[in-house]
Image (cartoon, rainbow, N blue to C red; front, side):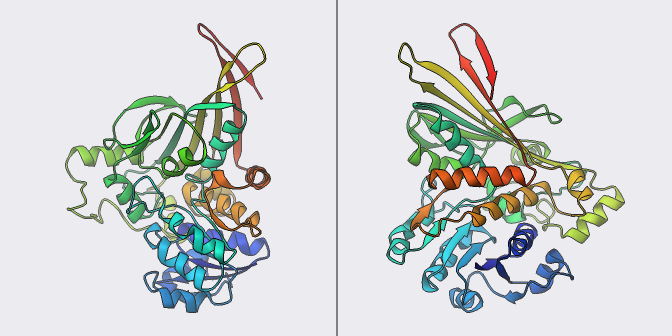
Length: 393
């Protein structure tokens, strides 16, 4: 497939390289080709065009001839890139939603009819979280006759005294100033930032960590495709702890804008290597857990179950041993997105969040993610009124 990747930063550059290994014909667009080349590496032969993501005509010119456009830049450009895909009669894929028009309705759905008329598909939120997390919720839901609630828990940490975020500064800032979306008692609501603190146990070696509500995209789509009563997403780790501390100090607000000292630019692979050599950055981790409570109907009685899926992505140390210098978040997002592309629903039309993809495609993506070496564990707990019997599958 001929694929144009807009945004060759930490995630987009690695994604482009993974797609090239899948034998796709890939080229990139970025507002700063020199910076993009630092992310791709001087040995890479992937072409880079200078493109401003705000310029629709520029995107159309740079992406001419592609069969799939991927927006790996900021989600604020989703609608512009979608319009470019429609003009080129190309398929579309992105990694997250922007949710400014409506915090509970992904903006990409506005283009569903236009995509259907052109017989093209848009796969949205196709990264690790959102993306893989959506697939895991749907997998658990398929094993239940009724879903009561779903919880998504994420962990992000960077062992560094300096503010070194695994996300782009724009994404980190947007997460810090946005009110978390929750779904309670069948209704969408906005919660307080950094609220509802709880202790949650992640897979070893992370263990127990404090998590708080976060503005995750999964909440905007999952309840629309999976009937349920409750859904929320929380994040833990030193990165969110730092943002919570700045919030309490009054340093985070939309009116104050993004302070560069708090939200530094994404580090290139060369810079990450330098930070590691200097001992500034020792390690970094990224993990996800999905818990779905539901009911399995039986001939004699209903059984209440808790289905849990855990994902432990490679740590910075593990990634370094592979000869790569990128963050666990960028590594995870790029590898999962590459599987969404590999199993792209080219015969379908419309807008598809991960949970709305055909079942066979969802299974293939999960199998592909595991084949890439990402560790996923599933466990089912049968819930009873007085005791809990656990049965692993």
